[in-house]
Amino acid sequence: MDKLIEETAKHVFKIDNLRPFQKEIIKEIISGFNSDNGSLIAILPTGGGKSLCFQLPAVLATGITIIIYPILALIRDQSNSLNKLNIKHVVLTSENDKKKALLDIMSGGKKIVITSMESLMNPVILSFLSTKKISLIVFDEAHTVISWGESFRPTYLSSKDVIKRLNPNQTLAFTATLDSYTEKRLSSLIFLTKPKIIQASMNRENIIYHRVRSLFPLMDIVMLLSDKSKRPAIVFTSSRKRTEELALKLSKYFNTMYYHAGLSSASRLEIEKAFFNSKDSVMVATVAYGMGVNKKDIKSVIHYDISKTASDYLQESGRAGRDGSIAHAYVLIKPDEDSPLKEVFSSNGCIREKLISLMGKELLDECQGCDGCMNIYTPCWGEKEILKYVKLFRFLFTKNTLLKFLKRKKIFNNIGERELRRAIDILLKEKKLKSFFSHIF
Image (cartoon, rainbow, N blue to C red):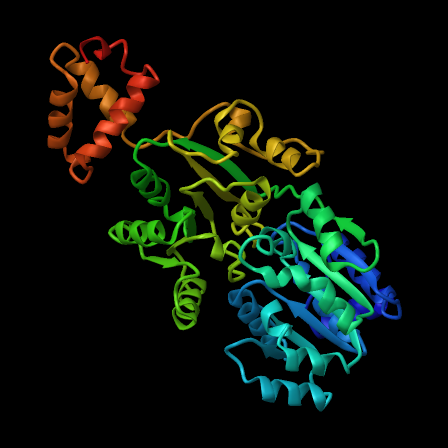
């Protein structure tokens, strides 16, 4: 079996050496080709090469492999990668010709199907595929079965009914992050038998975690990304509106684009291609891009809004450094931030260890780099200048005169009075200004 796997990897996928976990997972899947309702959960960190773990067995399987993705961007990305390798497959989505795809499957020439759960549940498609031998059903980014299915993708909650109808030899779930709750819910929703779990470390050693106590979030991003070695970069926000507004403001400084689920399919495709081909662009995105195009050279990920869970944060920050080079993940900590993860980044101690602990795991090695271990915040934009001016003229200032003075300084020309007032209030609350003039405010 080892020789077959190695030769297939080399001649079909142009890969000379498999990573240890890749080989273990592939062998496990191939060993189960003749099983009845086999189940496997494979957990590999973003950039760990998980696609190969089901692509290679799909090539060797005698029956059909159905790969289910949560978003069209991933379907397109997977299709593109298979096209480059000349691996025949069909795509079943709302954007594709379903009749032609089914004819291609019927002819026997194409036995890999890439689709979404909504398309798979189309009565015609489901009825057709139920008459075929299904070797593998693969859920990629499987954590979304839970995190999305219980909110705005209810079709995922019917996954087990689909599995029963199609009766595959094996059902496989792949994800980069999985906490204990999601693991249990996943097992109950998609598997007919108890799944075997193969897990690599969630620790992305090449990503360094940073925290920025932010007074002026926009300018913090500009400051961080002014270093060209930190681009291409992704900036994550929590809303579509903020994504567009922030992209517009950042476009004064960088080649910036934005991405969210509210855009048309054609627009998203155009943006994906532009960003994929860029060398120093900035993408402002909602979590819709958290599992986006497989762009390997992303140098930085910045969270304007902190993710709600450790699983989401590790998934999103894991878009950086997929080529194995050193990358950076920054979190902007704002006073009005309400994420449960705020404490992880605000308090002392190792950020990496805390994130992995929240996933129910232990960090087995030393931290490879984070601001928590060094007990520092990455300096925030504007604070040093405000404190410098106050120190020079501390006997003259009240809050209003300080605001007027700062607005006349070139560095604050593009900062609104509301933002400046908010920054001063934060510094007062933190007692950074107390020794200078807080008594006269």
